[in-house]
Image (cartoon, rainbow, N blue to C red; front, side, top):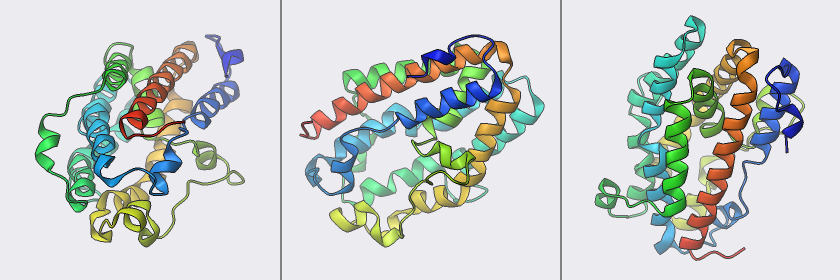
Length: 248
């Protein structure tokens, strides 16, 4: 736990370390079940539907909330580039990222009409409410950190900042778990391909915004916001795992 860093005047190195420690806890016991084919195919729709409704569909809007609140010109430019790519795919992907996400369930033969009216599970609803609170009503610093670091980031964030740390795995697309275990056509991995092309610059920009532009007085609040997002996310993923028939 990064509690030792919970002071409003935490220094830059302590702030960075606190955020990295939070992100290193962003991993869930059930994920290996999803990546090794142990989730029944007929229940995968639960995962995709809940992910889409909790944040994927509206992620460009969340970045937009961070953008419109941000008073720092340099940070707004990075956020604007991120927003443009997520909303339009105009820089890399060629299509909006939420649309590309739907290629996963489409490629698996799922009924995409289900995604027009997803009913969030209780913990998923709480996670989404947490994201809305942190991106809309807690100021630009928390909105930037939660969108660009927490939502977009992984437990390999240290590798984005430290050349000696473990990097985010990027196996060949033909070895993607959805391809290997569930028969997803490689052509349906458009979002995965886009992420691999853009995420390096997005991670660099995210950490630049947070470490270089968030005022010292706001750092404690950002750490608390990130911790709140993590707690809500872990509970949400517990719930999805249970709905997919998984037990710890």
